[in-house]
Length: 207
Image (cartoon, rainbow, N blue to C red):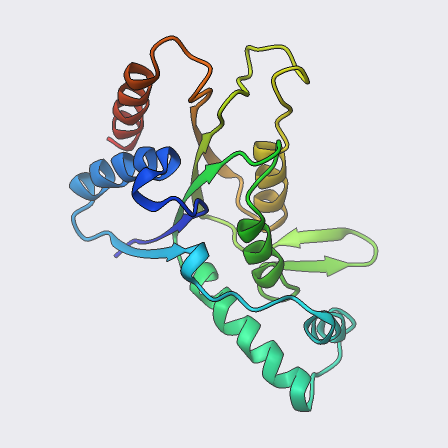
């Protein structure tokens, strides 16, 4: 059985075009893989913990090869539990609107919580980082209101959205990455037509 983790980074739910395009992809994928097990994380409803000073200390303890104790051990166990939901998946589907050239802050918070030494990456002082999540695949649905790769940059925006996601996933060991772009969603003469075509393209990609 293939496990897919679907991460929704928009707070707009049914009004979100990134989620709608990702939903079209998922529906076609489920038709192709009937036994696909899907776990959905709505980041704005997930109750993510703040990655505060105590959690940073817990991370640095592990990074330095130590063992957390007391409150730090409890906080680290919480992080391990949240990260486990991510690391146990075989495939990933992200619905990501562009916010100010980058990703929504809830998605960044999620990444900061789960991207941890010994869970998603290893580190060698001589060789650097090594990803632990090899052999997995990620599909990323990107939307943006004005930005499009064919429009002048920075006049119509800058893409820190996909560059950040690719860099993070690669560091975690995920290099099989598929991008589905519906950009722009607003600066277009045929918004509804483009929207329909984006959903159709996403479904075809899944098939």
